[in-house]
Length: 604
Ligand SMILES: [Zn+2]
Image 1 (cartoon, protein in one colour):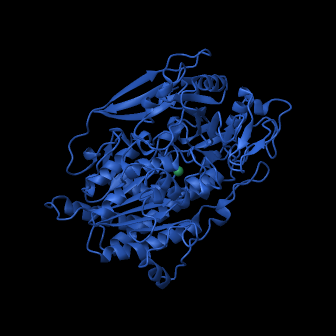
Image 2 (cartoon, rainbow, N blue to C red):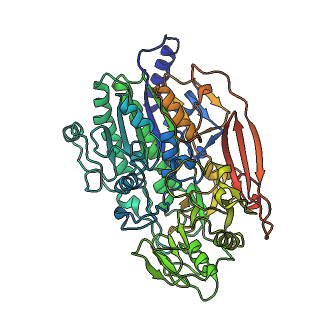
Image 3 (cartoon, rainbow, N blue to C red):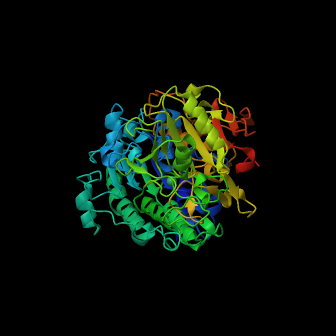
């Protein structure tokens, strides 16, 4: 049945391909399968996605943006800008102020609607400092809707917190922390027999411990609610309105399940390639299939483009180190097996290495003894005075962000020196404001320096990446991760190719059929491409923009030429060099992988 609906979509797309210009732009659905690797898309596990990529456009030279995290890539899809412009540098950033909705932390986790609202208040009404495609579509009179994972969906229209203009249904719907339901949606949900509050993840949300495996089930119940709301309530409403629509559907799977899966406790294999992770891919595929079926039944298949992407790839977690203070004799941490890294090890190593006190921004700035305890979320405020810290660490997973005071080149150099000596360090990137720092590349070289209004990170550390030797490194990547999850569970966020290699495809009236696009493409390009399909004219403040993927479109030309290049830092005192492998297409840059060549998947 899946392929039946899909073949109808293709045949109708074929029928419209020769037609003259339509009066109105086509509708766009952006379907994000969070953390989906291309290698996971097989006919058996993901038949609908396979059909989309085979029958429509497959972008085989695809790119997530570093740091390869969810809200960061949501911001780039939503605006078409790289992170140096959007300021959403990672899932957890240093905000520069105590965020009430994050328990007064200065390192808020951005997957939270209330936190996003307070970030907007602090940063001129829109913390992204760029108009999003959904905000522009809404301003043009189109219908707009965002459904799925809390955080990234609201980032597509972050200044619309009323819920009345852009329909929003996410994890927080029906709670005090959520965006209100649009008034037209409430009775329709009830009429469809659906609750007005999103179900929890239930057993899928269980991440386990070092002695108890994490979840063995995909996020099926919660996502079926989102799929039902989309297909039985939102799409029928949009179909009734005689105007174009833009809808984002963000599937937490396979990401949430790959993080939490209990298939591989403390072992690198099967890691994120076990049965629970496969069930999560199938769950996302099942949601997409339901959207296609609804488009067909509502007569929207001829007029709707469906774009498939993932925000980032994925890797299996390693907690190995021989150099961190945290694994030395005499140091131990609750719940952490001897010899393995605890969460917050970067904050621990910097506090000890700098000889400074460690405070926990997520526990009311309580002081933490770095020889025997870690902070609640791995974040760290370091210095004599937690109100005026020397260093702040925003812990994220496969990479962390580190902030030092403006102009404090001495502390910057000491932090870089401490990290360069660690075996878990995979590469270092430093704010251009500190000048050339041996062993590191400037943030401007990787799109992290632009017109952002949030605090500029001083250092981004990408952790070491390897693979388990399955033959395709992006299918079985391994990375050190600053996370409370266990070795053998899943993470992303590094600059290794297993994390920067996302899944991208498209099908519908604007796109070519059966076309493999070999040109480099990124999540920033999707923002520009959607704006082009909807004929939105969005003025840009920053200059770090993607391109319209015109070669993939029926009205586009041939595949443009591109080149592959590398950029090396000068070596530091330990001999470490951070290398960037990138592609250029015209004036657009694509970052394949970056880091120390012998510790980075994609550079070996
Ligand atoms: Zn994600």
